[in-house]
Image (spheres, rainbow, N blue to C red):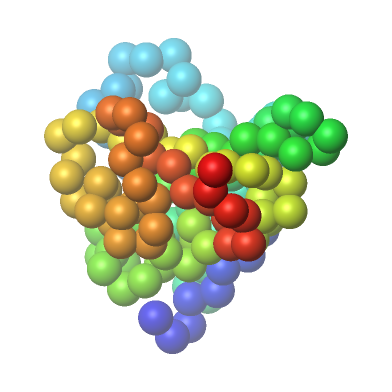
Length: 149
């Protein structure tokens, strides 16, 4: 989609990230985490948050986590992915995941993502970009250039 930029989140994106995070978790308002502020500086070491931006407005985000395992190689996880409803099915989610995979590509041997069994569209989305169901609800992808064993 023209005009949408995929970038690494900045601290100034906290308000927009919090708005999107709360949309992602609508229905969980009674949970303690729901009232938390979503901030790039609050993510764990080895994590990076990517945002989709139209002008100054955030319309999506993806949180990528890298866990070191052996000799600086490890496991990657797509922890969260959300795109505002009016911006879905325009390739933004794919671009966010691609940015996350690029960030992790030299650091990991495998990337996991989880999704709820009822979220059939999410499952189809992850499969369409190369993830394979490994064990419900886990999907897995090998970064480009990595050989399966």
